[in-house]
Length: 153
Image (cartoon, rainbow, N blue to C red):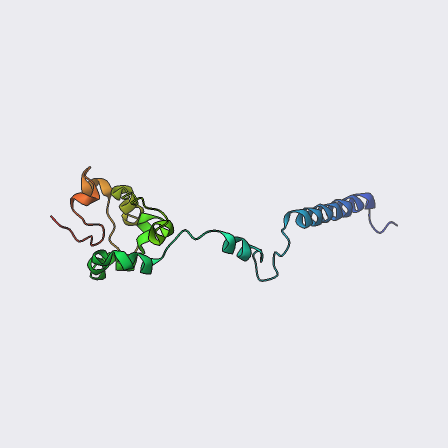
């Protein structure tokens, strides 16, 4: 009596399984970059790649050196913990003096809505609005100052 009926099916299955492991191993060897996994679940040489890129963000302290009036205004406002470059974009060239152009003023409504759009996932303490009901087609700057967003009118 044969121990297994139709052994050739099991052999084919084992061969397919072995071929899959072989293809996976070859693909992994070709696609995973060198140094991946040596310092955790990322490519170790990425640190050098990032370090080689020029700085784009100046940081809060660089903005505060020249814009003390805005720093004083923001110190009492709800937006005090939001970095300048979160809204104004990367300004390292402007802060270093390498770029004489004045940075463009961000378009307020899409920028404000990015954080303040009504969203069920946000805490009730976080101020959110339905922009159509709240602004009625007006820009956010009609009623709010961006650095101190308390209602002005």
